[in-house]
Length: 332
Image (cartoon, rainbow, N blue to C red; front, side, top):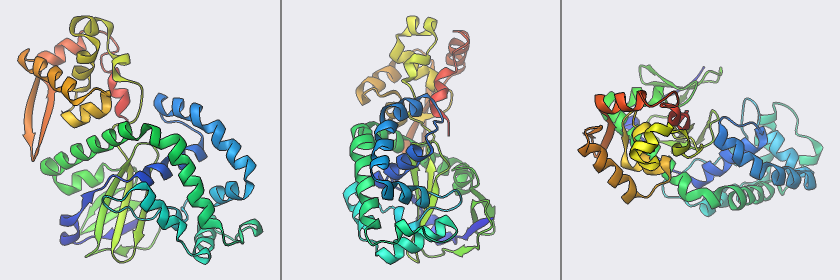
């Protein structure tokens, strides 16, 4: 298995980072796979996959670059620069474009696990990769970025609250398949037989993305290491669609959707991200539900988390077989 040696100082300095470039590359991976994990991804693929495939059919060199760089066991490193806090998409993709051609070719050979095809023995690979990422960002990510960012930020709020409840080990164990805290300052990052890395003293960032794949790791030795993971709040259908009709008729679809989602504790920011409702609307729904005794709130660090009371549970569970359906949005 692959693991990193992480000392206490590095763990204490670890933080979550939302990265537009990481989100864009995750979407490129989803387009490359062409297989959805939930209805929201299926609808997104239906909208954007045909144009993506036409683009690569018209540009076979870039198509080969993608097939070579997004390997089954390894991603070409230059395609996934380690995210930095506050970095814009434009700043991130500029790092891809600035890759030396010889390094890009070497990274592709590693991801291929063999010789580089003759068609990729050229110096414009970083430019082609950057241009493709710019296209994916402009056409398939930026139009949805406000909602995606809210979902990602909601995930960060939830994980930060989890640190206060269960410590970093609980958070790291739940990030993505293959990642877990082994003890003795060891963080397993995947089940593959890669040699361990000592990241003590480096910056460790944890980066959520909305496509529900397995994520990846990245590093810029020796300064910064990243674990990119699928967030808990997948971009699926509006939660109101999954609210039982009886509950919606009683409370109104929007308020019933909030109550249905609160089977596990969530912050206001998470509810905004998952429902697509405005902050004021969610706040008003929560006040009504609190006054009715259907939800409770408690503080976790700097966050306030809401969850259903026993009365709220009875109301949701008795409303019909789709009562838990909004949880479909939260696959991780």
